[in-house]
Amino acid sequence: MLGYLLRRLTQAVPTLFLTTVGIFLLLHLVPGDPAAVLAGSDAPPDVVAALRSEMGLDRPLPVQYALWLGRILRGDLGVSYVNKFPVSQLIAMRLPATAELAAAGLVVGLVLGIPSGVLAALRRGRLADYIVTAANALLMSVPNFWAGIALILVFALGLALLPPSGRIPLTVDPARALTFLLLPAITLGLHIAAIFSRFTRTALLEVLGEPYIRTAHAKGLGQAAVVLRHGFRNALIPVVTVFGLQAGYLLGGAVVVESVFAWPGLGRLIVESIGNRDYTTVQGALLVFVATFFLVNLATDLAYAWIDPRIRLGAAGRRR
Picture 1 (spheres, helix red, strand yellow):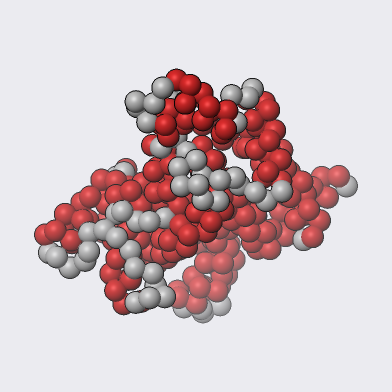
Picture 2: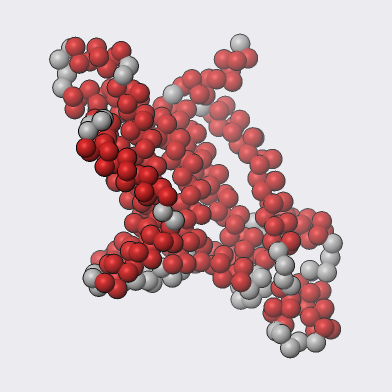
């Protein structure tokens, strides 16, 4: 397992390097001058030029990239152009809210998705299967912002059961915090639930057709025992793979959901910073997203290799 981990870390180095190049170029190619935004619309050109020089934006792009990459390697994400705050502190203040929302969305996805997928597989071709399949198709096609607005209209403005926006930290008042968290978490989790449900159904149907499942039935085991002991674990492999892929959706979806519900997380910080042309803050926040996505996928690959040893032995096996 250690050798597999080292191989995955080595393979990640060029990917992370190209990611930093992509983030840097993408932001610097976006129209708009951060110095002009900070100086104000009535600022004279010499003031804007002096500000650009102070911010280092008058240097060639390769030099700016090299300086930025050097700071990252030293653990320094820079200082916000707008707030004059270290970017690492801004991220540290917003990250808990995004982590809380992503974790809650994932819980919603798992709680709704896997049981409904198992139910659809066990009731294949019956009414429950058709209902789950239709619901999955609907949830996968609905954009996050539309689902969020619909939930706000029904449960916050129509029924007045839950607050429409804002956040209270769980450590301050857990009961009230859950009321603020519920709608954003459901919005983020519904799409993931549909994905989990679909893959669980497909994987379980394949496993239930295997000869060892028929053998288990022939030995007199009940349906629940066969599914839980023999079917579900083997069906987990594709579901675990999907879990890793959905980490990117959780982080990307959080940007939209945080904007809809005024959730003070990292995604909202990115949106605000893009509007202010605050390059250093956007670059730092995107790097955190990329690093989180990489760590989740690494953990997923390790879990995948643990469940199926052929994965970690694949390279060695091919060499032999």
